[in-house]
Image (cartoon, rainbow, N blue to C red; front, side, top):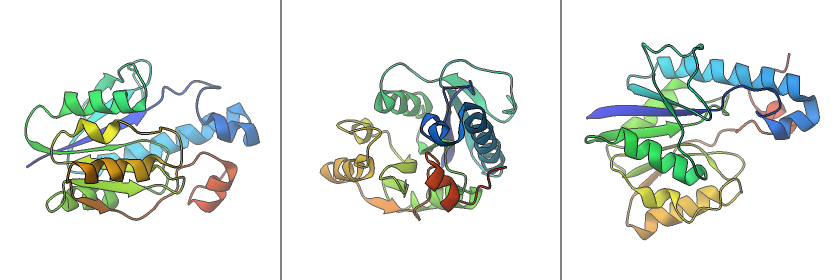
Length: 196
């Protein structure tokens, strides 16, 4: 069965990435952290056996993401749910497994992404819970736009509401281990990332 990996990234512009973290360490340092996160994410993705799709927040760039390895796209308009729905719709052209990740989770490794693909052999949905009540990974083996509707985005309710949406459609859910989304200085200190 075809495996596809969607990666959401922000274009790395000073003052627009890791804004919550920037309140503690400043915009320049926050941009440096974000660039490190993106580089780590890229390396882990390259080790995953899947067709790879990169979605930028603003514009397609010539950067560390090779066009040989990643099909490049721009995220759609709308809230995060609408952006994810559009990316899944764009990627689910034929039967297969599709997983989406962001680039904020330093501790996410290729093995965990591969494990998520494997869990889709037995479950309709796989989710990687984040420490902030959201998720760092979500995958399905069919297109289920309802998973991204009626969600209070950017809150501690995201994971709970997503699971509720899945259960309401009688979709089986597998969970991965919880990891840390790097949004605050406390997150940095608890993760495997070392501030330079």
